[in-house]
Structures are given as C-alpha cells and as structure tokens.
Length: 137
Image 1 (cartoon, helix red, strand yellow):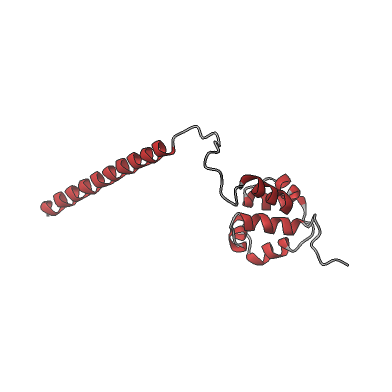
Image 2 (cartoon, helix red, strand yellow):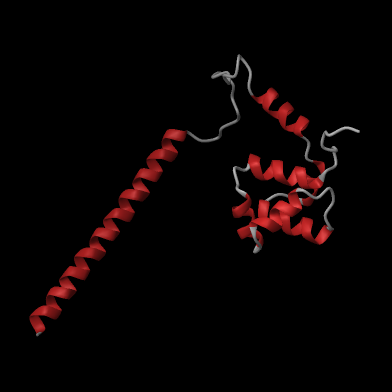
C-alpha cells in the first residue's frame, strides 16, 4: 500500500493552495469564521461536502473548480514556463504592459502629496479652532 497522497485528496489541495497564497491555517480559519483545528480537519480530509468546499473556496479567494482541478504538476508547469534562462526572466520579454510604471509611480507620489497637504490643512484648522476655544475662556 502506498503512503503517497491520493491525487484527488481535496484536503491536501486546499492545504497547498493556502500555502501558495502564503496563508496560515489561523488566517483561513478566521476568514471562514471557524478555528484552526477545524481547518486542520478539513485539510486532512480526503473528501468534504460541497457546502463546506464553497465556504473554503470563498475564504481562499478561488473557485470551487480551482480547488477540485488543482494539481502540483500544473503549478510546476506554470513556474517552469514562466521562468527561463536559469531562473531569470528575460528582460526583453514584453508582457503586454500597457502603461509606463514610472508614470504610475509619479501618479502615486502626487496622490500622496495631495493627501499630505489635506492632512496638514486639517491639522492647521484644528489648531486654529482650539486656539479660538482657549481665547474664549
């Protein structure tokens, strides 16, 4: 008898998806409104009912089909096809980026500056109001 995990062990698939999302059992439990022990039981179960699977999928942010069809081999194929040249993505590869990242960065800087100026003005208004209150006494 083989000790290897069965390919359709749904709990193991859930566990691997959770790990790939860099999520701890506690975080998944919280997202599901349950406890870590319940998540551990789910991840050790070969099968789980559809209702629970829907709940798990929602908490993981994936579809039920993604869990059912998950395979370690598919993930390794995706990684293998994404990285090349000894693990370095070819810098000349165009991933159809439709915007200039530097423009986006500068937009973010402008937004932060605007937020900072509004916060500063709100603090000045607050100080002015407090000074008026103190003079009134």
